Amino acid sequence: QVQLVESGGGVVQPGRSLRLSCAASGFTFSSYGMHWVRQAPGKGLEWVAVKWYDGSNEYYAESVKGRFTISRDTSKNTQFLQMNSLRAEDTAVYYCARDTSAAEGRGAGYFDFWGQGTVVTVSS
Amino acid sequence: DIQMTQSPSTLSASVGDRVTITCRASQSISSWLAWYQQKPGKAPKLLIYEASSLESGVPSRFSGSGSGTEFTLTISSLQPDDFATYYCQQYNTYPYTFGQGTKLEIK
Image (cartoon, rainbow over all chains, first blue to last red; front, side):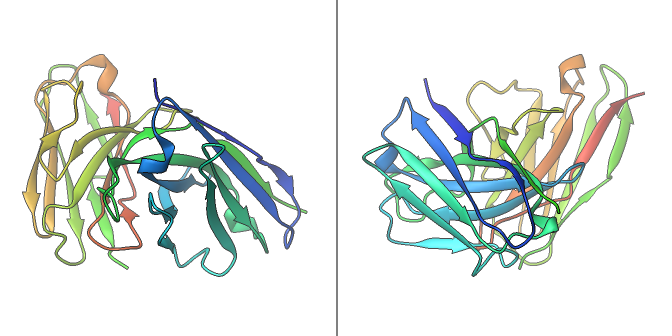
């Protein structure tokens, strides 16, 4: 069965960095684009970033562009989110989510499987 | 960015009621819209994609409609398990964006 397990969250001071991981299993990881979506405490969902299934393209929300980098290691079936210059407003639960469509350019654009989330708290 | 606006923000209803949630896009997104259900402390669950296609395994009491800028999610007969928060999401253009959510409460 499809599983996505995030890790790497924690408490970090403003301006510091953190790297999140999402370990995938139960499907051919290299065939799917993968996204990060976050949810601040008590707030709604915010799409953060995507990396296409073939690694050819990546896109970011304006709020994280230039600070966050999405990457993937297909040999380890894992995707990452490198978060630099963290701000208090980055405090959230971070979910990784699988794009529904396999091996199709930008993918379908919606998400059929989600991880359980990892909590990032940016505070001094 | 495309802004997604849901209404109402909160909806009180009873088991057996028919309810409708509206999602409006700030510009046309064709039918590139999904709906998710989220319960407290859990990841969202995909209900509807391409505005009106029901995800496999989702009960048929859920339905979606609309195109362009106006969309609706309808639950034909509320069940106790349906009390949750619902989000729409556009995937017409990057950055993808979500509505602010509609919390469905028990009356």
